[in-house]
Length: 164
Image (cartoon, rainbow, N blue to C red):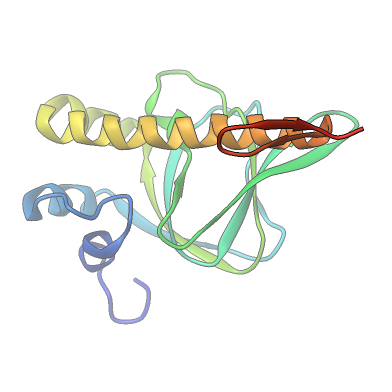
């Protein structure tokens, strides 16, 4: 694990899992594997079968919308953030490409194992579902803001400005 820290130690301080009970963290820690990526490594490719959920420990990634003619960075994520939520859905393809922006490490959890744990421990499952929905909402908001920017629309909290 990163330095002398165990997966349990990292999970107790990680923004995504902070506040879970010791027992819940222990269950999640048993599913974790530490992975690392180098600058510009593609971690997830849009359209591929989604298998893993990642909790960023160090470094950062860019969530990208990739098409045949362009790639757009929608959102940058760093330490304490998470990605790969679609891995918890049965037979779901990855919706966005994820690329390392710098050397990074993450705790990786199998989506199938995590979904199984959520079914067995309904209290943990409900808590994780709430946290995952927050990730999804953040991704939708980041996508909306990036597209508005590309169209020349500024989206401030209470007003929309169209740039001519």
